[in-house]
Length: 192
Image (cartoon, rainbow, N blue to C red; front, top):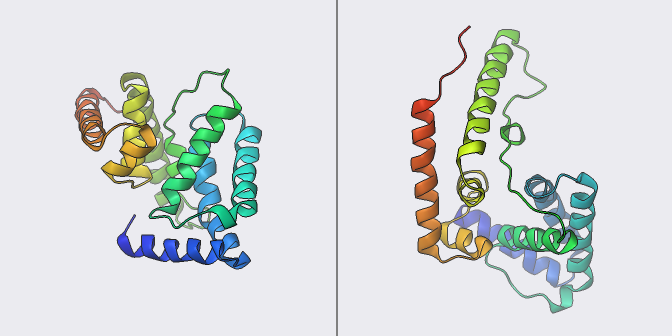
């Protein structure tokens, strides 16, 4: 996340904790979808994920007089999501899943059929590659890659959310990249 975005979202958060309901609605709009996409990486039950998001926002709203300023609203909400899901479904084994379809860049409004077909083929290739990575990377490596390159978190933020120190977060991301490069070298796309 860029510094300007952090400042803007921090000021939105400050406005919310001072009682601005519009700021609360904007925070929800900014983060609910990201929280959902993040939550389904841990829990297959979409109803639980949706209920968890709802519960987090209700708890934040009702306790806003007890909240304090944040440096990173997104990180705060992702940690709240992870902790709430883990608390909610402690008996189930959580496994972080990577899903390229949640990062899809194909839009419904594209008119050029040929371009759509090329992108569809490319997306299928990406899905095969991600499936290969899914089997080779450890759950922690998958998480680190997701946090760094999908969520755009810094190494210190990755350390916070994964409950490791910053150097360990860096090492985990770099080992994941190294392993991904090895997989990519061995990856053979389908012949047409």
